[in-house]
Length: 211
Length: 263
Image (cartoon, rainbow over all chains, first blue to last red; front, side):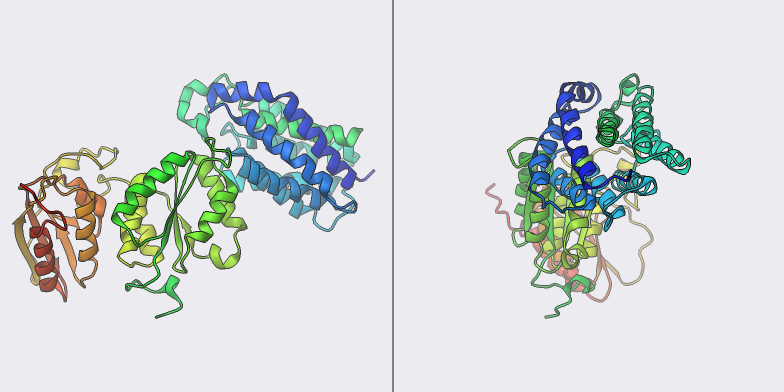
């Protein structure tokens, strides 16, 4: 069953909940190799997103929902994740503009555009120990699932599982972008907080589709 | 006056290039502006530091507003500190209306040195691309295209606050190049404000001017000479207005560059 605005709204609610539930863990990860504000910043951002999405007209499209997430995150998240995730949601919105129903191929377009937005903004590559390391395997897995003819929920489930694996795989890496890049070898053994929060958001997308 | 100042090749204009300083800290942004302002009182300098609730971080709305308010029509050069300040500035730039966006440049430059160099360049009426270049060439003295012996070790540190005796590299004197040596009278040496006066005056002549072998358009390289009271100052000038430049600049140095010496 193709996914519509109800899914996009549910993704926002599940995503905000996941960030709130894992705030302390994200703060801890960021304290290890960054400046410790990632959990706070994202929680503040998504807390601001919820009422904005509720205010949207009843007939708002998935693209409208994603664009609201984008502009709110950009304005309210003080750290790098605001512009990065904001750009991701903005590009995702553009990729599904004019569509009320998203099939597997459209979901792949959405995820790929989001990932490309993060790459464009942050200029990070896979293996740099950033959120790109969660998004890239997610896009690849989603594409494989969609091309295999899997239903929409399974496409997002594949993305969520791959993102979690990608986030875990950042642990042995030396960071080449962001605040953790100042730490050199000392970042090894720590999971990237941005990859972890992206994995949580992609898990929320799958859970929203499975409900 | 041309309406097309942003693309004007560089003659002095009433509208100056604005400077925006984006920092995670409101106090850093304001402090950099305070420093630059001293040397560029007529240039629009806007601080965009900290989050809306007074915390450490960058605020998209604050940065967006600064990009617009700094623009007199001649464009804006943006200086940023750590990574996410650049990301916020980039994002703000992407979402700016087209008219403003096309005359905003984000400098790849150290925030303090870049802002000061850009402000001084703007103060002398230069166009957007020259101001950007001034900021981006402010990365230190080690990239000086005519390296001096005392910087040849290539240290990448900041050029400010050093006390070094500059050395004149008198290469082959070329015909048409005029040179005069005078002595610095300023008690505090050639620090930022008088150096800025020198750079601004030098920029008004159609001549290539050097100070002790250093390009007179580069405030930071002049400051990095570390000239103290009593230091010899060798000024050379080459070009159509070489003679006038030399007379004017030597006069400026001998006058103390606006500083009275109570000694």
